[in-house]
Length: 164
Image (tube, rainbow, N blue to C red; front, side):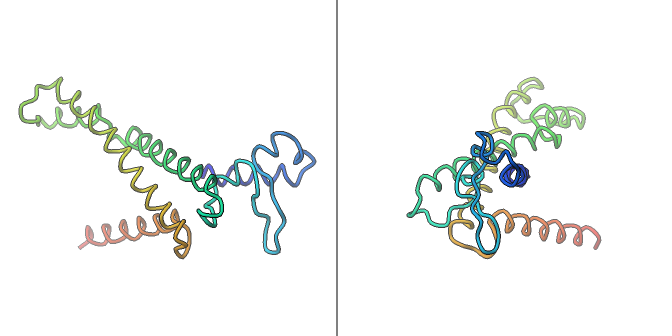
């Protein structure tokens, strides 16, 4: 979503009279191709998958770092907003009168606080790595599109199984 907004704002600046300004060049420099405008510079260029790692290793490195960092941060944010944070899980365990073996009530939260954010970040990194791998190997569609399609199919199968 952030990439789409960046593209939209960058293209609006490109086609307006402010396209040659510092902000316009920083967000993206666009080149008119036969089928559409493509980013050739600026931030919009670095958030698009590179066509070849060998031809432009800096682009591939920046794209990889940005995508992995955004996936890890998004997974951290998702854990907090979805009610799966360490505090929420500790509260749910206490409400159900469950405890972790060998831990007191206060120690459960501390234990979960060490592990849940790390697990969320590693999961986000794995999803990002899978998306990068699909983008770099030229899979049909984009890596992000493949991940979204797999998630939709998985949720559909789960909902069908619950109905039976």
